[in-house]
Length: 360
Ligand code: XIL
Image (cartoon, rainbow, N blue to C red; front, side, top):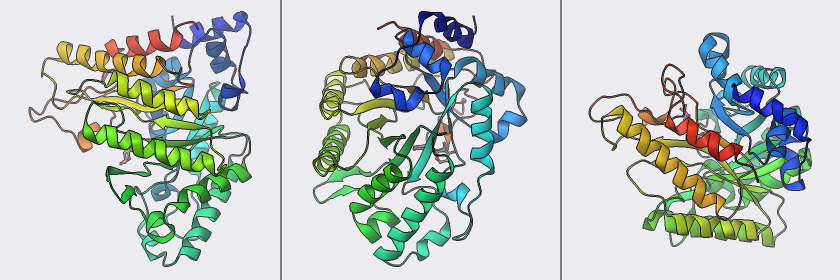
């Protein structure tokens, strides 16, 4: 049974929704149906250009996803070729695809250190940086007001390995504005689209390592400081790029999610994949370890709070960012995602389906 038929079948179960979830799925029947069944919408990052060139890729997204997010398209590097330009073709194409297929679209991302066009290096002062950031968010969030219900407003704000004194990662925004760029971004997004779910998205909080422990603490400190100043935001995105060779810190991750929930924040899994560069070469063995890591990760989060969405960063091994940084020494293709390179479900898809479909 196609996932979508399953979800639509849930429609008869009546639609339920809670405030925590409304902003993401208010207008999306399929996701509300999934939610009504006690389920959690699943989605994936999409390479929008492939929707018009690869039928099996498009069908796999339609078969499995209730949410899509552009892998590119809404990053500055794609959107802003120059200080004067906004290029919206890609996100416009993706939101049209989402609407035609009863899906929600997430926006990724408004303030990040990465994928910045060269011209932004010329931003010379705090005043200019604030003007550019506010103008960008006002224009982009304004264009999709009411149509993109959830935004990664701030992406990867925490330093790679937070040490004393350098907790916030360097970026043009941090350099020119300091940490207050985060508040500026969130307040601007909230003012432009008060109905949008505003998310602070980050990574490497899942393992029993000093780095993950420090990043969990740094992220919680940031969240608390923002909440203490009544800065508007609603959720934390746990990216979930899981090192396949490291166990999940079930206690540390659950406690982190407990603390996030304690601040009346939702949790989303935003970019799940399992980095298998250090896993055995045998595909069957590798797929099972990948699935187990993801299962442990989702279970650890769920012990404290049900995530309001689970997205993978891509859906098929044919297109994944993982080999950009984590190529396998044996030259074998990475297998980090729920579908194999021929878009056939793997053990990871089964784990995600079972987790997201489980009734309340
Ligand atoms: C990655 C994309 O997958 C690549 O195609 C691109 O070249 C670089 O960015 N965390 C994030 C994503 O939040 O935006 C990154 O996506 C992967 C890591």
